[in-house]
Length: 416
Image (tube, one colour):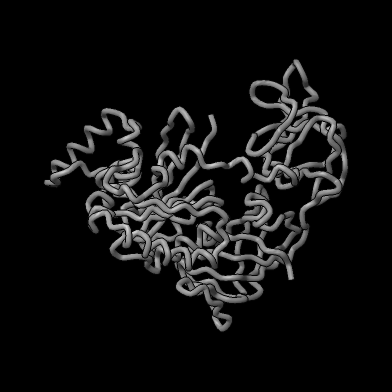
């Protein structure tokens, strides 16, 4: 069954957790013990209704404060699709958690309180969705019940968001009026808004087309591990394990291993259940090659006439997550696909102002949760594509060399 990964986004108290709880509750995606625990906790707090936000707000601090802090993942399925939902925080200080939750999403659900309209945090999350190249975005205008299901209020928010989204890079935007608290247009279409002619949220999630989202042209295979099982049946077995991040690979294909540049041919492709005739994203496989090459973790297998960029000077947009600001001259650890390297921040090109998307070229540092363009110099060659071309080979993380805390998520750009 096809899998769709989705992440929620938006400002605090816009109803993200309640929306997911309603989606699971109305689609029969909750177990009886989960439902009993939610009913019990709602009664202990004196709530007059079933607080479905408790489905994802599992931390004690989250339930006490009524906010989302950590990224909560929930799984459910319908006859049409399986889903992995990442409920991300709305508070500014937890933007880095939102980046983590949305980094692997196929679709982002951005919530807006119809009474407040777009806030700075809504714009920040929409910008992050755009930078992370999440191909599908659903704007859920929530709490329609509090404005009497007024059509004009919904259209006003839609116009405001459309004006902002025109400056982003999101190819598919859908807008749905909902009331997460009462379930209007979440799983079933509501009769409370007869003027709305679109689908419910669940119907859209089940039918959104994702077939063209993955790159099936540029063959990319980062090597994660060299497999050498010493068994009596095949003592000479040598394979290279990893996940296909682009293109289609088949036995008999001529390939090149980077950064060494050595060429060979694929003789077989193995999975846990036996050989396969082809491999494509996001399959985890083991490649067997015709020649005994020096192939190690961090190398990348691709086609000889369709190679990524190999270089040490990197241009990138970064979402800074560290408590200490990012400044030119900082030394950091860089993880790209399965390869680690060290890098130095050569320059901060500009900081991106969230509200108006202006470039602040006079900026000298990036504080926590800020976004900017930087130039990095790696200590060894990095084999990469631009993020626009391939989300896996075009992304990286930066870590503090002393604590090994992840301090940034980056998207690689074309070099000047």
